[in-house]
Image 1 (cartoon, rainbow, N blue to C red):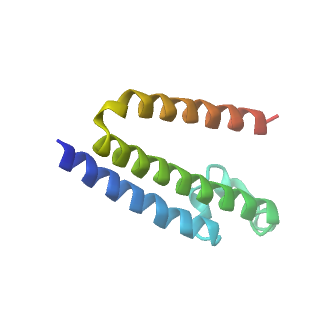
Image 2: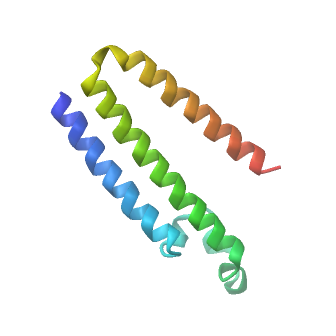
Length: 103
């Protein structure tokens, strides 16, 4: 079971990092919700590039948290509840930030 967890985490983390690199560089922006509804002028604006960069950085953070949590749990099995609490709190902070940005 541990090998499967490590493998899945590695694959997903690599996928998130690759997608994050593309988003930070301004590629694959059509993966962002609402991008296809923008006019051509709006698609070339700095705001869309900033959203892509923020989404890419978010993917880097998620990949780091995934890898760090698996490494910590593998090295210190007793730390599993603490890791789950940290991941849950980071998820709540992220959701809060998203809702505050909409205002």
